[in-house]
Structures are given as structure tokens and as C-alpha cells.
Length: 82
Image (cartoon, rainbow, N blue to C red; front, side, top):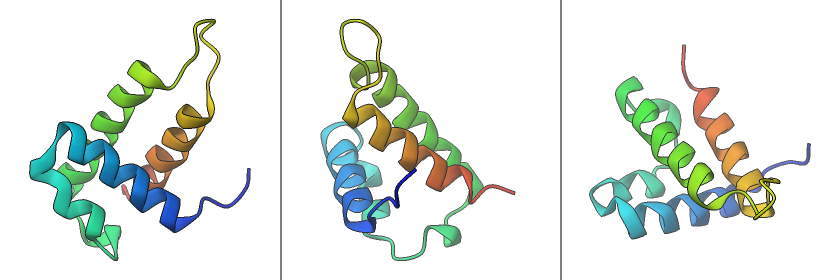
């Protein structure tokens, strides 16, 4: 799997949070996600998983590019969990 560009990560996260969870938008501007509380990381992963289910697949239930990027972002936050 290719490297997930941090700019793509930030833009994607910002877009999702801005549309649906503006109260968490501050997280998209964090420089170091490892400083986030575990509860916040779980909440972000849940938000991203919901977005993946809603928009990450085509009509035949094949994952699309947006879904692949969401999976990468979910993995980024998953790697921060103990």
C-alpha cells in the first residue's frame, strides 16, 4: 500500500468533520494525533467508519477511491491506540 500523504489525510479529515461534526474540526488542525485522548481517537474512528459505510462503496459494493482513503485514515488512528 502506498504512503498516505499527510496533506490528503488532513484535507479528508477536515472535509468530513466540517460537513458533519464541526465541533471536532479542531482535531483536523492537530500536528500530533498521538496527543489525542483515547476516547477522541475512538470517536474519530467511528465517524470515519460511518462515512466509509455511507460513501466508500460503489453500487456493486466495491470499495471506491474515497473508501480506500478512509480506510487508510482509520488505520492511522488505529495505530495510535494502545
